[in-house]
Length: 408
Image 1 (cartoon, rainbow, N blue to C red):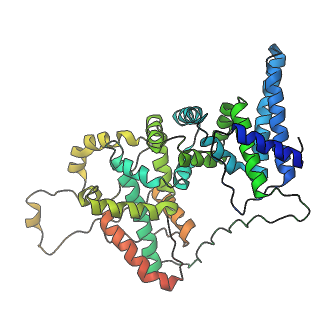
Image 2 (image 1 turned 135 degrees about the vertical axis):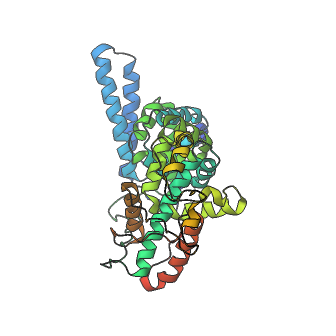
Image 3 (image 1 turned 135 degrees about the horizontal axis):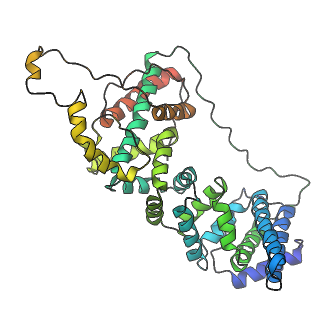
């Protein structure tokens, strides 16, 4: 199917008649080559033909036909990527009320069966602007509140260590801040290519969305996209932004499948990306009283991979910890045995493999060099850690020549 002017007119007329979804929003920077869009339309035509033939065959012929259809869906995804309109198509599908419930059911199944991976889900939540909703639900979840606070403590403890080392000059080598990722250049026009104008592109995208919606391939298409860790991010982002799934439902599905525990572990080990949002959230939670200083007191404990049982395990271990931990409450006679002016400082925590991962993620984002002999933070509770982190950053940022990072 080649896109001649008459074809464009036909597509526009068809879209006007059958479109139930909102018209796609096309930015001024959106460019799509006519040849690339032609490829998408040709593949859709092939898929439609394969679907029609499916009712006429059986046995081995049916299996072969299904294999060709599956391959064609993969080709469709690749063609959408190459054309540069995949984001608009995902937005069109996830905002189409005719198939919204079907898409929601597919996403639910993918999350509950761990088809969707934790990094992809976290990225989609972040990109959709709903990360604070998840943080708020976590802090009010009796099963996961302790695990979430420990994640935050671990991230900020590592951040304080990193900034303390920067400011105190304890590093043996001074590495330049990590280079910021090179921004993807804006699409440039190929002078030899034939581009679609904005109005035609909007009409064609609406047509593509409608064809996919009516073709019977929505389930196969969405499942294939969700099984790809990279491709699933954009689709889940669109689904969350457009309300095809609600963040509260996603939270419940991820919690029941154990995916939320994996998400917390990934969040802890990649704190450099999310530290600003976490700091902002806990500052607000402390101010509002949703979190108290007593909740945040103490050093971070291990955030296990079974976060839903963390509070139970902590309660069971409490009597044992009280009798074996040196810094815990001492016997009543202990103060008399020592001069009142003498106190024993708590031993510096030994960084665990998890803490090393957090530190490395911070270094990846903000620059610096790992130090095997990390100075212990001046305070072990998160409240003081936040203040120390901000204070140290303000004091040394000028000397380090660091640019301030804005986190939304």
